Length: 386
Ligand SMILES: *Cc1c(COP(=O)(O)O)cnc(C)c1O
Image (tube, rainbow, N blue to C red; front, side, top):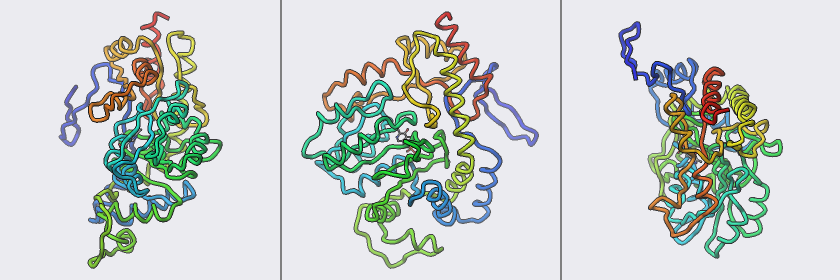
């Protein structure tokens, strides 16, 4: 860590060591986001108003269907699950290998997250295992688009149709990704995105829900603003309801103009972000594929935008430590949820537990330079002596 004074005398603390720490992920921002935020601050209207409406309109144009913005990706999932009427006694099928946000969103409604295995190829939900976990209480399935890959999403929808389940896609990793030529989010039952600081696009914090189900959308619109009926419509007209009614449990899960202003600028750069992330993934694969100790997920990195770049290796912990010693930050996505005390339902998931010991996430963000990436690659080669 070092502390420097800039020309104006402000202190800046950086986490760059002498060689410069290579970060696993980071927010990648330019002057444009800063100027947009400054404009919102000047407007002195920071809450949910015209900027949020514009971000929703821009996203609606991008996806070709209605988009509702909320405060976080977790809030998007939580509100979507509540809007389909989930509650105590209901069950949702979800892979254990996901961010705890997916599980927290389910348990927040009172429903039970039923932890499933993943396919080894792409670390998306294993439907054969999910089938064995169906009960009369199963109401929904939540496929998680791990690292941006969506697996056999068509099969998920067939499975859901056959068993009368709603589908809530946790697409937090999949903003901008395509499936059979169609953008994830532009089709399907309910899709939820996250715009937190390190996602494919960020709004600082934020999330979005996409659905064609008008009833679900209306409920969501109200519930993000404390359940106050039609408050969204009033706010977008620069007004507020003073005489209103409330029917549902609501939350303060709306998006602010500050966050929307960041998101609007980030969305404009999606093609650049896409190219850059795809190049990073392909550069890793090209340069690491000769190392026999390393395996990749079977994902088409020409079609998807890799949110994280994950490798599988039996010497995961040693490699992670070696890279950290060389100033390279790596990650583990994720500790399986059924190993957490809150979600420990006395089950074992052998495939998930095994893969958890092998996965390592390498640095991948749009500010990563070729030099930095080559240093990561060379360090991995050195570790394996090849
Ligand atoms: C980031 C993430 C979320 C939650 O999004 P937040 O905006 O951080 O609340 C949910 N699921 C997965 C898989 C994520 O990576």
